[in-house]
Length: 197
Image (cartoon, rainbow, N blue to C red; front, side):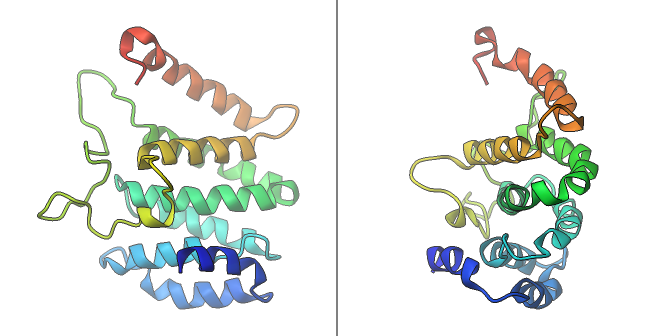
């Protein structure tokens, strides 16, 4: 069903995104677990190629900040935003540029570099959060995005990389400057003496 939903969305009639978001908005309640189901549905069903799809990006950026330190949440937001950026950057470049700093802040948070003497990471060893009694994450939505043996951490980093590439305008700009800063911040962690992180 997940594959069917992903493939069918490009055949949805014009205006379907408005209907989908109208149905899902009431479920985006930060005090209820339905927020994760709504996010999964939004990620699967939102037609990225529909005229006006960019209009939901600011709303999604606001939603993204509601939940922190939950890998599945980040994974879904990265899926939607990287796909929307791919399809709308040419026509909406300046609007994406205004969100670039926020996106790079989230990317740096997702990369989860150990800073200082602290060894606390936002994602635990099981690559999830909100664990249930048996140790597995509750409401794991990774079934929507993982394929084969790729871990969710690798998937998040790949989606971050795609989003960053889609944000890079030809000839330089803010995204290029922030990418250089990001590379400087992770460079020492990639050194072989640090086990390559």
